[in-house]
Image: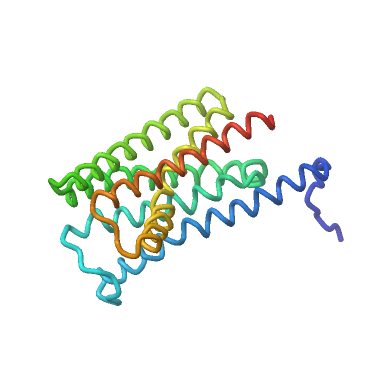
Length: 223
């Protein structure tokens, strides 16, 4: 009887193995981080389905909310997996297919974000500032994704990865906003004003972009 075995593949140095292990932990961290706001999204879906009522009521159409939650789930969860180096090298077809599904989720997030920005916008200064942030971030995500796709078509893989890191960082804004707003409320002893809340949410997106740019430059130095 002949037992089929998988090819051994090239031997990896201890440094390469350590980097792979570090990246695996980073992927796990991204999945956990993105799951935090998605938990509230699931609670919202259960509320809209009439199964559980733990979330505050909504005053807008449920269509963009449901689309935003589902799109964000596809984008953030599948997007996190794209950072696993073993996936790209051992299963390139899965990388392409899951990446395209994640991009569809991103497109849904962008469109639903613009819809919700209009629905929730108020004429106060804080409301206008927050709406401006949301529109700007949605546009920045779209530009980053389109730039990434253009780089991939030109086989500029390093540039493709850099733009996708930026797009993914923007998509994780909701998770960072949870921590920023919670920290601000603990420090000040109460919920922020509408304007301060908008500024804190903008700060969270800025933090994510700062981390993304640091990561991109670190990759360039390592290369």
